[in-house]
Length: 374
Image 1 (tube, rainbow, N blue to C red):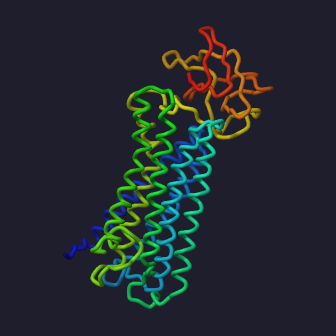
Image 2: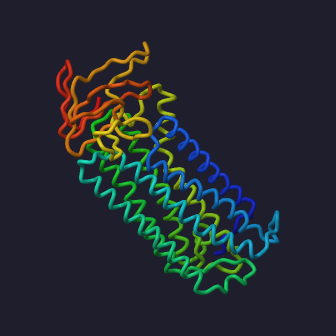
């Protein structure tokens, strides 16, 4: 059975649309987080993925700009360079987006939890898989450069690279779904906030679905799916244009970047539409900074020790004493001295209080146990 191939113009339109959504959503995410002074490693990795996505999209157009397609009719030499950039930019876009998702989870995990160490172990694992794929592609494509002389130059990475890449896709996507769900399972928060966060992190399944379709076509009996979803070429018949191989793989990178931005964009829209506090307010957010430093500016931990009255614009201080455990951290707009809050300076944006392990809070209405948030 012959699978009809869509026109290049159609593929370009689809890929460019998804890439455009990914680029715009990431640009909004980075600017928004910087503006509200919550820019952290997850946003930094999103910025890296954004830059890689732009490189990927531009060079994908150059790579597919063959004499019979246009519009600029790039030379073969230009398309060889574009192939290298597309192949590497795809890997960088995909894995930096996964790093962004992973650090979004890490910022929710208190430092006294063992799961935080597990998450940092995942960072090392993701970095190792990322580096392994890049090295594998470079070595294979440099060993045999005969593809430079073909009319439509593209490196034939082979079945082994495709299988390795797909295995890493499934492992990483599964981790990005299971770890945050396990974390949120035992966190005390409002039911609506819990459902929202579960939905956001479960969105990683979309990337897994793309990988599954890729696996079926690439490793299945027809061998044609690879022409639609991968950047490796194994058994595609000569009638299948090689650039189609790159286009749908770039679609996976775009979907991964969009999914990485969902946590920020959805919570922003949630607050905007319903006029409620940020759902992040119901969970611990840590940045690993020292609890003895003045935490102000671009820090990313637990917010202020006061609650804002939105109707009157005033602040109602609710804290008289706060003691932090050895590994606990807080983002307090004030001074910390010998483990106690020395002074408090309420601000206007999203006032929150988070209590961690070995923390004691004295209030008029009683004590708040460790692990709960105001």
